[in-house]
Length: 508
Length: 91
Image (cartoon, each protein chain N blue to C red):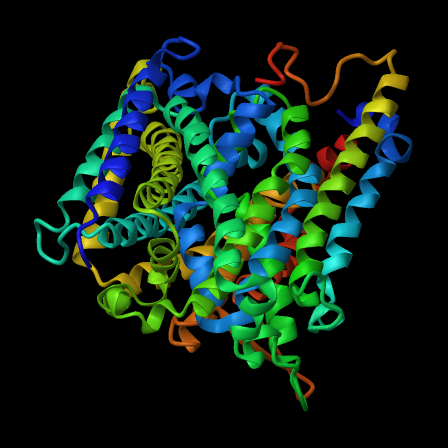
């Protein structure tokens, strides 16, 4: 890959701009950042617009922007499951999370595990929630780095050796520094810049690239017909249909259980803000759908057969499709804008994820098990340090461990995080579930989900569930959380002692 | 808490049933797994699902509006369950 000085300069300039914003954010809506709910939740004061940017930057990450079109590019229609997935998240957000927000606000919860601890009075269940959250999020942070690495490589910075990793390391040191000083305010402010860049890039892409390629008809004509739609299942299997639908539903159910999504929700200033965003976030979903189509544009543009991008595809595989398409279609300066959008799109979620992990560690491990009498200032101090540790861990992870492991772990992360659905969601609407039953359900769900992924060699999360001779391939996360729910529902009446049952009925 | 639930119930929360619509649009994959009819040369599979996003957003807006109207009508109960009581809902 040739070094592209114009694109690289624009890229670096935009990166410096958001670095400045990141540090300046400490003075935005000034408050005592030595309190955890100020540092880690922005004081719960973000209104509809800021929450829209924050959640948008949080949920539609750099990895999404690289991986979704890469999947469409490589596998075709199945990669489009991201679209029904985002269709399903709005009702879930609307129905469930304003209530969660209200309880968290009233009781001063900063993490989902705080809520579970308070709601079920169970330290063990809260510990399970906290540890699951941290473990599922770590590979997600690492994947943001992967997204960033691809665009840095595409700009033509030397790569491969330790010097080649320097741009990535510098970017993460900057990220770590402004997260440390400004907390959640930094990604909230940077998300605004990131989104403007993303929207500009994508609208340019969907206008300029089709014109160059001869219109959408020509683009879809270039795609092999067997990739354009899902392969209709035959015989005794539901094949691609059940896989597609369960992937979308399972991913939608899992999304808001991730600690970074929870953090975004809890930092809103009211439940109304969340309800409004259930509609407003669809703008991002629509853009995501368009981004998915970039995969087909890359096929139509024939970037893979272009010798200029051969090295990139060798090094990064299908994830290089979108960067190659942009290099092929845009002028150098705009390539810089587009790549900056992706790289900054990695900073925002990485910052929120590390803050969310830091909140969980501080509240639910440090305060709960190590230093119960710590002060507010201690809490904030520990969280800031943990956010640094988390990011160092992510960098080491990406540089020292083969990329395939990060992807496999993220796949497992989705299966693990959905196991928090019964303790977090059910508790909002009914008092009939028992903490020990929920904990056993969690154990069963984790075990079965992990087993299902292992049976597929950790390369696919689609498990072929067999019943009455019919094979129903589906997302392992969805299957395993059903087991989790059934165990919790079956055992709750057994564990609920009469006194608790009396309390439960009076509370209904 | 319990009191609040009873006062709300169906009369207050019925619009939320509309939120099933976005799920129904996308849950039955065989319905949209086809190329024809195309729209502006875009196969059905793609434009249908993109349209589902817009419909989903419209449904969420409608539900929100309906709920606001219902909550406005119940103005003898101004303490909104999910409002912090602080200004700054927009920014």
